[in-house]
Image (cartoon, rainbow, N blue to C red; front, side, top):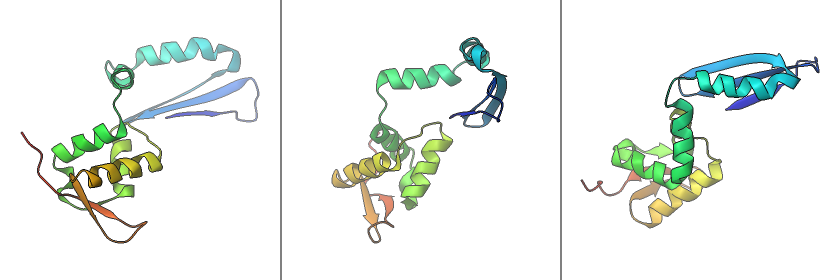
Length: 132
């Protein structure tokens, strides 16, 4: 997550980065942002930013991540769209809720998950166990 704000001082910009359990906030002059961001990203723990870049380059889709949750048994309990979105966010992936909803629908059509409840309040459950 990247938040940029201008605290009523046009010469300063505040940057807040958050992923998983860590959060960094930096304030710098607006004309120095091109210098600060690379230094900030380089100072992060190995794997944090690089993992996101690698995931993007490998084409990790929302559906792929949901399949991973299924393989882990995360859908053994019924989960709402909100639950799924929160879990993906907790793991550092932020998709539009409509993308998450479409992926859940795809997995339901494929027989991986089942859904119970009424439209707009479905709960998703594992329908079949993952194959080893």
